[in-house]
Image 1 (tube, rainbow, N blue to C red):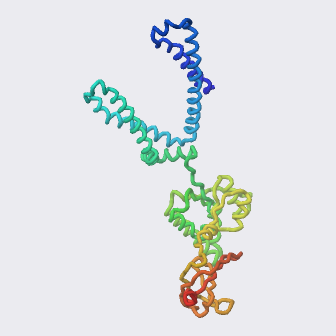
Image 2 (spheres, rainbow, N blue to C red):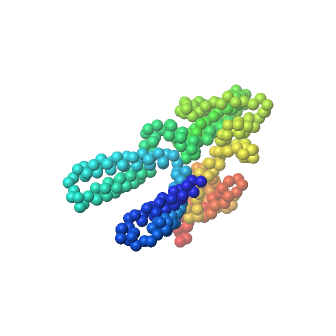
Length: 361
């Protein structure tokens, strides 16, 4: 409907201009016309055709502009509007003294031209500055409200809440990840996880008691360091027996991400469409990749299965088999990687002493 209105406005406006435009002709020409009304209608018809073409052009560009505005985030629209207003104010302040200059009437067109050019130039400058520093400016005004607005419209994605498993707390790496800032969002510790840690800490088994106390100590340190991010969730499910099942059920209820290093729990949660962050998977993906030809410093710890082989380990536990490394057992050696093998038990790297490669070459 709006498209038809836009085109109709241009058609009728152009037809009216063509109809009345006959009056601009000189009287001598009008006197030679036998049927002035027919000439007016002809001019109006041609003008209407031109108006329809202009209307179609305007309508197409209007729809394109409307689509672009709809897809533009609200913070960009707001900052660009502010940038245009500031640009126009600066242009008026700079150009105002020019209007007081004595300019001859012959050059009177200079003032409006300078006003138009200055307004366009400073408006464009204001938009450019808004695109570059707009969000910083909005955050200076009210950072919490602006970020909430951006999250609401989808420009920013909120960090998902993390539901922490017992094994992940006892492991201890979560504390280091929080300290380094790689974990975002709220950390929820369900009440039944606290109960499990307490049961472990009260266990008669020395190993379990040590693990439970370690988990409670780590949790206390995290809560002291990050009081705003560590929260205890009171939910519990008496009808669900196992802790793993409770975790998956709670994650589904609150749409949280499950943070664990339990392989079986990860598989069960994935089957139930729960987002998983497995610390073991993260550690595995962060291991350095050594390609044939790379050199590394290695301590040979023991003899290999094959004759003349030496065995060493990287910091992440990856085993390195060194050919001709038996004589270096107990010492450090610079080796060159020859190949790597991925097995079900992990990754294995094969290497040779750099000295033997250099001597052969």
